[in-house]
Length: 554
Image (cartoon, rainbow, N blue to C red):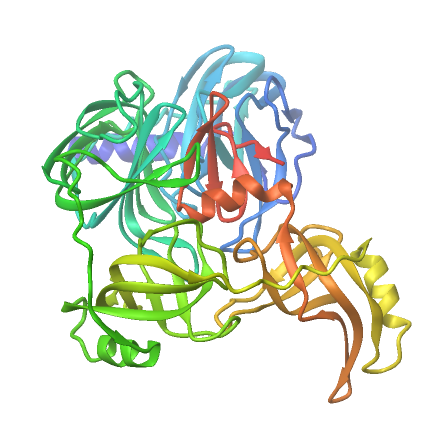
């Protein structure tokens, strides 16, 4: 022990005598020169140049480097370089290589608060480092040693994996069939109001084509796998083949067991075992639910039940215990309210109204449209999610159209941008409205929760800019509007003046999505974080799309 301490003390003393030049990074990617050394960041072979980004959690500027970017250190007699990085997000680790000398990695950073330092040693007047393999890195500091017989830095000892990991807490499984392949998403729960996963989560993208688009039984290898312990704590499978495997067996129709594993970039083996779980299956090509045929497809009996009102259904379901389902079947008539791409909808007593009664995964006689008058036959359930959200719903439901209620035609109007809409509204008198309708096209920079059946949306011609024009009490014809989506809102423009405040707005207009955001909308509605498109993996983070290199997809 004494000897070890002496060696450590000697090492510290040697380092303290080094002549080191420190360069810090945060607010600029420009070349830096100090003490005869120059450091240059360049795009290199990458698709994106190094840039300054603002960390959405800390609100601090950081220098982000992407796949293919280079760092060049030049100067007289360079004998050592220390490069310190941190990590932000699930894909922010890329390996580093050098065109000369010896480079040792300090390991994988697990968070923004966990810096890791790669150490280069050698003798050179110039050395270039390149980011390769995948991902991106946050550069915080570079220390350069050289000149006058300086002692080079001591490379770090690569970390030794501390043990394999068994992943628990995976309660739900989604199976997504896309372009002939299956993807499996294992997760703890999902927040359907705010559209985000409740961790932990494991995503597994299969490497071989599926034998069937209605069966998932089998053993699969992965082209990609990753584990999210939390939003800022994740690990991906190592690129070495095979990435990982998962075996799927069917217990009975609709109920499955999953046993999977992959080796992470940290060298640990990650395993999970999910038993007796119901699988939600979705076709990413047609945007339709899939009825899995493993274990046989049962013929459901034609349900019958006492006819009750929506209010009575809410009262019966509300009196149940958490996650209890009635043994009795009920018949309820009403209108289709908010309708989701999954086929789920809210059942309301009048067109445009609202209720607290949802209809979950129904079997329908024909396609539903918001405002349809329907009969719903099924059992009532009081569903309580892991996050504590309570939903009163009709399950195992059969939906039959009684008679379609005509939907008023969407008004048409002159197409204008948001700036023109602001100008038009500003020219009106207080609380005056235009005689004609307009269609205002722009970005939804702030879209509020549609829990009331309509949405308030601030709009701008520029994505991310402050919105000064409001689409007030707006009804969307094709699903909920989210921030940064490109939309068209049709209605009459007015200048609202209330309580000494002026709002330029469209009141009770009709909104729809513009095609630019179609893929993003699909991925949000079906809860897909990653999907294969034209041979490349598309990743959804928040409301932005990326490819695997971290490049933003416009």
